Image 1 (cartoon, rainbow, N blue to C red):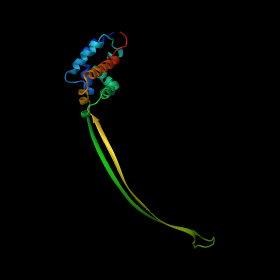
Image 2 (tube, helix red, strand yellow):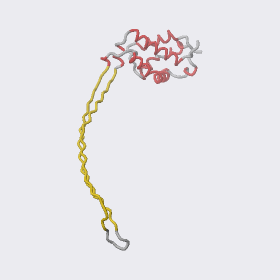
Image 3 (spheres, rainbow, N blue to C red):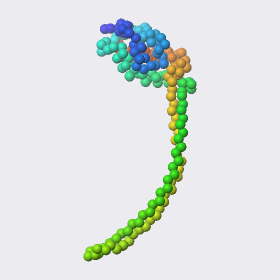
Length: 179
């Protein structure tokens, strides 16, 4: 069995993760630190044998696909400073003014069985108008959250918690749960 500390020597797993999806806790020299923390905390675990032939880029792609949204949600759940949000509000007003005038003349005609002439039997003449007026107002709000700014405003304990969750998710994905 290959240990995680031996398996991740071939390159930077967190560099591969950052290439797939930039995360606010990666970059600026943090990738190497995260690699060392992964080895320090989980290096004695045995790597799942199906992971061995895969490259770190392939493992990173699968790990981000499985956990990437969860990692972003953890940042958002730990509290967001209002400066991390960008809000755009659009108000649209539509005025509808429609006038319809309808005239209808219905006649029921009959003829005798041996005559070619048609005679008006009964009928109906109707006139109507529809006036539709109205105003419709719609408001649309777009709210964008910058995860990097949100992460920078978190407390140190919240940042450490997020990094520990990421390290545990990666270790659980790559290794077996036994030692």
